[in-house]
Length: 632
Image 1 (spheres, rainbow, N blue to C red):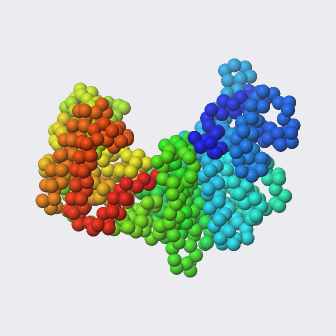
Image 2 (cartoon, rainbow, N blue to C red):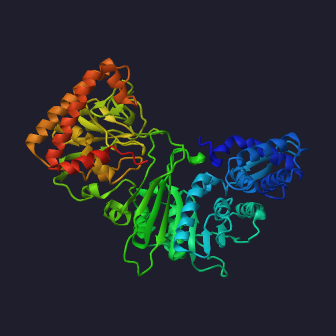
Image 3 (cartoon, rainbow, N blue to C red):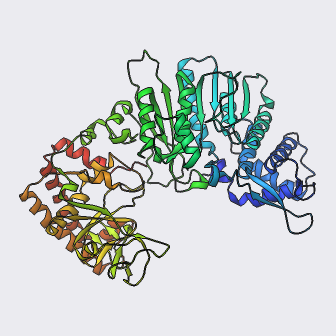
């Protein structure tokens, strides 16, 4: 965890401490607690913080002292005044109790806590507390943009304010240098009450009165804003809910934002972007933090990306590592800053791509910053994806290469889907190959499960022809942090791809080795990577991979691919594990000479694939470099 991050210092281990404090605060009869537990806890923490600042914390009971030590210890590492640090610490300590409700226990005068069904944060609302290093980075970008514009004041809107991370951060970072009217909307009155208390506490030292907080409790997507608020704002900022919605609510929003949300299922943060678009003044800014799937998802997300590219300059895209959000440790968050174009604007600004410097994410995570012409280049990519690594040197891959599509030469299908209920029986017993069993040119059957014909466990059972044929198996599930997007191997009869793997059946089974080599090549990986870097491989994209036919090259590539396959089978026999993560280091250390031969064979394949596609030397170098880059 990042030692400098408040959000990582306040984890779920602090909830028992918060619950003990709430029980101590509950003097009302069981089931009749007046204020919300989260509000009570906020007032209690701010009271302790005030006593600490005034030097009156000597005579505290053990529980109060423990909470005060937690708050003070978290605030010590914060920039700025001690009061602001304690305000931030209180915010992060309290916000995981948002949605907490009180119910009577079985025993007399016993009180229990549970998450309110209508406000369970992640499950019901898709709301997650913003790590302060993300809100700090976003706020700094906005303030820098305003300073460049020489703005004399700012009207800032947060459509889902939660416990007040962004108003407190702007209050702290602006430090009275810029008059700010901050407008906060949330449909949870408890969240608004907490935000107002924390902002008031943090602003007690502010004698300038430059920061003003205005709040309203309503649904920011459907309800109109108060009539006395501005009709348009200079900045819309925030962390909208991350949740896919369906049903009546989804249809209601589709009616309101029909041009962009024309899909049956979509993520609600897309509606927040569409709503923000209608509220931003020309020349104003939009700054949101979203899951990285927004950059690549199809459907409604593609429509919203097109909306942004047509109406905004994307000035900054910042990428953060996994584990930034404690509640969603597997998600990679990204933030962006976009400026709404004036009608008279005749140019598109360059986009700065930055990888945040937080130590989270491991040593292999990219840490760099560079400029690219995102506004122009991203429009050329399929579905207008916001590709952080796209550049002009590999933009030619977005255009048609010579050849018929992969789907012309065979059939690409997903693997058999394992089920939790009895639905379909496999036609015969087979070895199931998952993504974790597949390495380039080798499908390891050492740990592959045997699926019996007498066990019904498939939502989509395999067809007999899938099992009985030679095939190419491909990893369908690929983590976004991996360099390679496509990893393929030839599989013999008696096997079938399952769950996280897919299969390709060439029209001629003798071509399995050729297509295995092609799908493992730098060219195929780069071609696919510029179209998608999401968690799973999209069959619809891969089916479109162009493949030129030349019998001479196909035969040369097939022969070398077969040699690679046989060498990998040899490695399988001599190595205790052949699916290790650090494969190259492990193999070079153990079977160095033979593995170098394998790598040389792969390099020959790469050259032949480039020759097959008639790729120039300069473009070959660009493809090799792009194929080996980590995007996240």
